[in-house]
Image 1 (cartoon, helix red, strand yellow):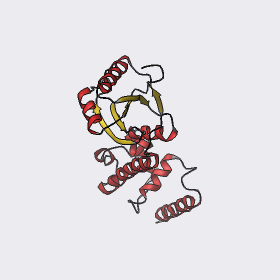
Image 2 (cartoon, rainbow, N blue to C red; image 1 turned 180 degrees about the vertical axis):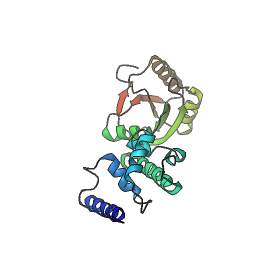
Image 3 (cartoon, rainbow, N blue to C red; image 1 turned 30 degrees about the vertical axis):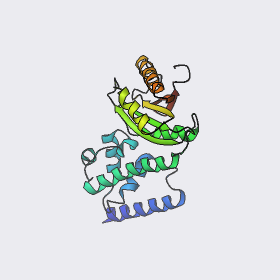
Image 4 (tube, rainbow, N blue to C red; image 1 turned 90 degrees about the vertical axis):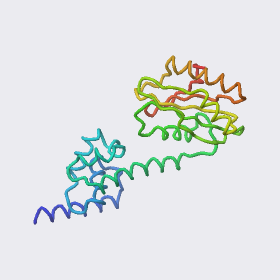
Amino acid sequence: MDNKNNHKGHRARMREDFAKDGFASWQKHKVLEYLLYHTIPVADTNDMAHELMKKCGGFVNVFRADKKRLMEVNGIGSKTADYLMVLGEFVKYYNKVKYDTDMFVLESENCEEYLLNLFDGKIRECCFMLCLDSQNHILSCDLVCEGSFESLDVDVSKIVRIAINKEASYVVFAHNHPSGVAKPSNADIVSTKLIENALRMVGVNLMDHIIIAGRECVSMRDGYL
C-alpha cells in the first residue's frame, strides 16, 4: 500500500515539474517515463523507459522502432506501442510542416532542415529528388531510389520522366550516407554527372546534389561537379 502511494505521489510530482519547466532539464529516461503515463495509468514506468531505450538503442530510436520490438519490453502492450509509434510520426510531420518552404534557397537554414527531416529515421541509403520551377518554388519531392548501405541504384530514365512530368526547370538531389561520412564517393560523382547530362538534354538544370550524413549537409556543387 505504501509503495502504491509513493508511486502515486511520484507521478504527481512529475506532473508539477512538467507544468513548471516542461522537459528542458529532464533526462531522457525521465521524459520517456512521463510519456508512458498517458497509456499506462498505474504501473511504474521507470524501468520500462530504461528497458525501451536499451532494447531500441537509445531514446530517439524508441520512436522509430516497429511495434514488434516495442512490445518485446515487459509491460508495453499494443496500445502503448501504437502510442509511441504515433509520437514518432508526429515529430516527423511537425518538422515537415515547420521547415516546409515553398521556395528552395540553397544553404538557407530552412532548406537544410527541410532536407535533414527527409532522412529522419532512414537507416538505408536513399535518394530524394526535388523538382523546382523557374522561380525555385518546390513542385514536388519524390523518393526516387532506395538502396543498401553500400550501393545506390539510380534509374536515370525514371528521373528524366519525373522532371518532364513535373515541368521542372531545376532539380535538386539529396541522398544520405548512413556510414556518417558526408564526402561524396567516386560513384556519387559519376552518377550525378550522368544525371546532369541527361537532364540537360531535356532542358532541365541540375541545381545541386546534396549529401546528408547525420546532421551534416555537403553540397556537391562545392568542388565536386
